[in-house]
Image (cartoon, rainbow over all chains, first blue to last red; front, side):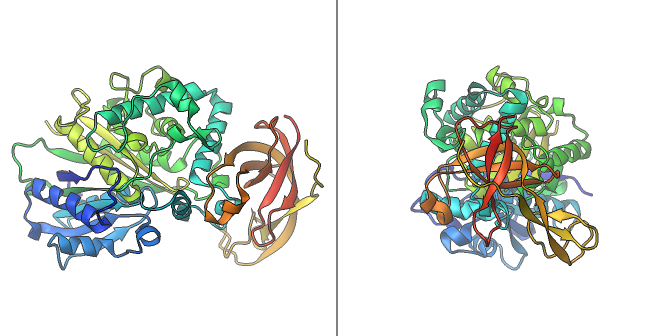
Length: 386
Length: 117
């Protein structure tokens, strides 16, 4: 297998883009990535586009071909991939596979979603397409509800408190204030978090990521195509995709996602990197409790300690492991199909030393993108070459 | 605690070839790929693993207002999701028993706490 590098990145700000079409957002991010890569478009062998609900919310499909055509990429395979909230990460993995196997020398990856034009009920209904609607969906469960269940179980098993979980919200919202791509950074207090509306008990409004519009893109390529000699080389050290049960009742531990545990173990093995070597992680904090669970599942924090590590500042900018310096989904926003690609963009900026909320001396970063009820998961590890 | 008639049993589906139990009738058995199933009675009692209150429901359930969804560990070892008739004193680990099926088409059971764990 060939080594795979990230040659260029692009992103819109995540947030409300009511006047911009979903195709236009994707083209904006894709054009940025292509130009930054310096790679001639004739060398782009494929396009993978991550998107979840452009059909139900926009009445638009075949986005990969639509976007590629507007970027002047014609006649090549253009594929939309869908894996709920992990759609973007899956698009990235497929692109890496194409380069690693030699089927393509360079591939464009785009993630995109527009959601903010929909009502809360329409959005909840569309997002629930990612649930097993022959089982959990029929009970009336929603995704905030899924993480409400997980929160209560985590509190029962490990003694995790409201204050512990609020520490994740306060940290990520503060990180978001420093990130120009983020939708809603904020300087929040514990009292403000605890006073926000109840959504799916014990989950409150500030524990939930906001719906967003946005797009992100990267160009991945073989080493010989890297065309910017003055830019640090960012290598994809691991690219892993796994699956888990789509039904909550098939999860033996409500405080863990098997797909994440498996993906992380495979990623460490593939890269030769240890959890202790990771300088920062952009992980899937769709809800505050999810960050705590993910950090434990990824092996970055001891099992059951995620809440305490957050409240002790051990996951902040000066902590043992820096989690979501971008602000994460909680502050940066969660345009579902764009999120996984946006995480890659964030880590690349960190490894180049160009991030607005820079982790000092970062050389190895991880991304974690989780879809549905843990039914799809990707983990990537990226490293800066000396 | 609320007064509801307790159901003596729930219905499960058992693979005729390998006897694996599932909550709802599948097209194929995930264990042996068998395609013949029989409906069998299954215990209606267990413990409350966790629950939540849905305050922002999807379109289909919007008319219900808020409602409670739980995960239940049945006494036969099967874990299932369903509705919970929640009371303020409920805690994870409490004993539960099914009291109704939400609607015939979905087979979604409704549980209530019968004793505190």
